[in-house]
Image 1 (cartoon, rainbow, N blue to C red):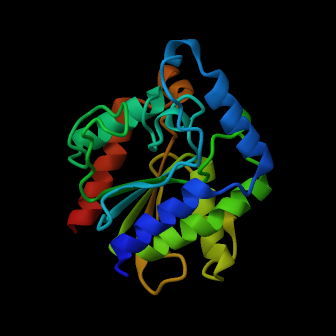
Image 2 (image 1 turned 45 degrees about the vertical axis):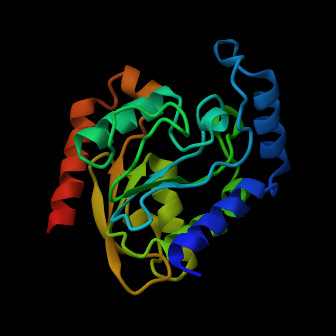
Length: 235
């Protein structure tokens, strides 16, 4: 079985997961009740798999599906303001073929980029428990094993940043998370989880509506990080 075929099977396993009772209840409740503006949608209401180019050099790592975003559409960062911001930036940088991402069948295609998340189900108040994060980590670890061309990881927010470091810690590749503090624009040369090669971890504030509307994360700030990513990949 090729890596591409294994990714397809992994995504099926992700979609079938029911490991976390609290998250199962929440995602299904949201899918039943819906938001008024999306009342005509058939919500996805299941774990959301990764999305993108299986031969990608850039891996974008987020937090979790939004209740009325990816939990509705079934695709990472699709159907909400955080995704709108992210895909505009990826399109400007040449990683996405269009600046919008509204549904699974909208024609969006990523080039040299793969998007995934620390958690595959929408958590209440966007706050997963440590156990829920731990339950999801094997999916992410297997995804990392299969994405053999990745050279740069873009962590969107502190939880994504720490998720990557915890995988390294789990494999005995680093001792302390404190040696690699999260900060917008920070970047670190680090091992690939469980592998012999090194990659560069880039940090950005999350593209959440709260961050972008308050100016904590602006398009210019995000573009600078993406330029650094592209510079690194070219080198």
